[in-house]
Amino acid sequence: MLRSLLAFLSAPESEAALPEDESRLALAALMVRAARADGDYEGREREVILSALAERHGLSAAGAESLLAEAERAEAAAPDTVRFTRALKRAVPIEARAGLLEAIWSVALADGRRDPEEDAFLRQLAPLLGVEDRDSALARRRAARD
Image (cartoon, rainbow, N blue to C red; front, side, top):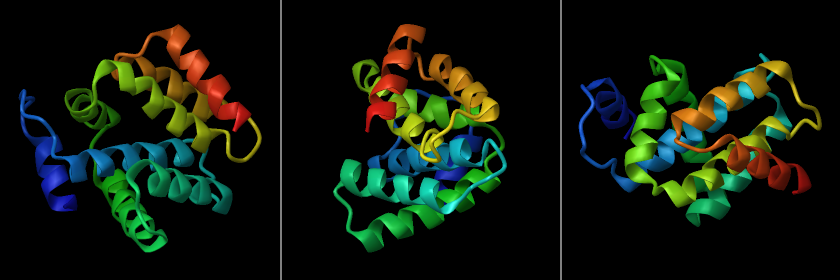
């Protein structure tokens, strides 16, 4: 799956939809990228990612662990964030994209503080996903309440 996603991300932009397994991987990789944005990818962020992946995709603990391990490799190997967001824009309807941001915000806020690097990453991510500033702010507030 990782090889397939990286090939998809490296190919010229097309209108082809991203297969569901690969869209899961793209979202998980963005979560990892958000967690690593401040240079401190610690246990709590990893726990939040695992929980979100299990809940969002109906995965067992082992399935979430497997997806996260693959996402960590994909994030490290991916050339840029834009390719992940383009892929997700093709796979996820506009009305559901704020939910993606909420999940990613929950990772960024997992350590109980708003880090400038994570904030900057999420501010960059919202327009790349086609999410309005207002909807991004609402997603952040929902994530902060959880």
